[in-house]
Length: 606
Ligand code: GLU
Image (cartoon, rainbow, N blue to C red; front, side, top):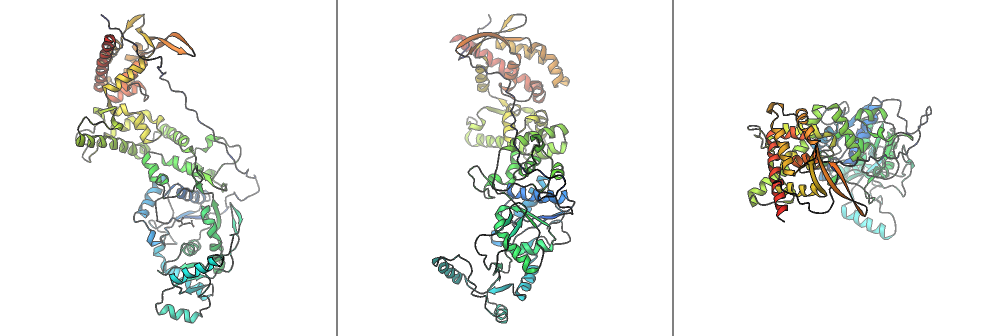
């Protein structure tokens, strides 16, 4: 006799179809560029030489990537050159692997440079620690011309000076003790090995004409700041100015935190009689609490974006829009740009003031993933999307294996609670696991291709597709079935034949079993299974408002999704069956059948 299915719980079955994703359009603000009159945001008419000049005291973060990108775009948009210069004058703070990581991270992002420490160029060397002689030479020139002087004050003397100044309510700046030392005396003391630094004689702080902030005057007097430290290394200010001049840099785009230092730089240019480059200081990136983002926050380190599976195109596009905008009237979808498109659209239309980082990366990632799916570029699939997905699967699987090894197979850490062992086809083929890989690269690549449209980041992709990667545990099936049948009064197939869940599973299994092993691909599976699935109906009771309504719903696809994916979203059901392979699909039918039978009996016994 056909077993009865007892319906438990309330009328709570959710429709399987998900609501369409709503994409928010972003508002634009910006100045309208005059058609014929060049303004501050117009590109220069001659090739610009720009540079990215990071200090290797940490890794590239979104703020520094943005600076690099803007400089890159300006150079490329004007047919100029983009220079990479490593400013490693603060030896004590230099992080050992920061320089190699710098190259790696910038290359991953898709940026390249025309000149730099690793590629050379006509104005090298491009690492400041390799240019010490140059700085000594230019400092000597300033000393000779009376623009700079040696300072022999000790740290204790300077401290004492600062305390007195502050006590008297004066600004804490150098009081010029060593300024009157006659040049010959100063030279002799230096030749005798007396420790000293070199200070710039800064008697005024010039007004800076910035492309973004316009006329900027530093509040308060300027110090006789140090240009060569006691250790013989130049300070940032000095090396930066000497190098920008010698490397023929025409434009400096950098974060607004450097604006306050720029009067010092301009004073140095004036002392040398050099023309300064044009400066554009771009708004500081701040978080929602209006605090400055810094490279100390691991979450803004670009390697963490890469490891999460964010596309380099997404990240570049995202940072591009943090402080640069189109003119008025430009539609939101035009925000989605490849690097080449950015080059063609770029001008100096920067935003003034702090810029709060936003969530636009999610929208941009979707759009760039769509583009990638359209082009299907194999290198992007295997080179960009695949590694973080593989790494995430490897991490979960390795954690699980480790857990089994140390705590026994019964341990069930939260992350793996609902997952069984890897699907057989997802295991690396014999001999392919030599590098200790735990998952088949071919399998993961196939999964990526069938579900790429839904890819947001590696972790959410693996979560969404977990049942394509790992087998489904009976408890998961059971819970999912209970949810699926809530509100279902009776199941049937056309014409009007009542069926139980286990009967339906058995029927589907028989249909699939008939498909030849060599024909196991989505189209044949669909051809065989679709007529049956579309004949499955459910008579349901639904609670609407305060009352109850009765109706009939198609239920075949709910059934198939339950068997194949424990009712979770994922790739299309036929695609998923093809990926899992015939053996695993049939195995899932068998497990599901057993569960449906047991549940029905259990229910009847209640
Ligand atoms: N070395 C400085 C930094 O780390 C460069 C600032 C500039 O671009 O002048 O950001």
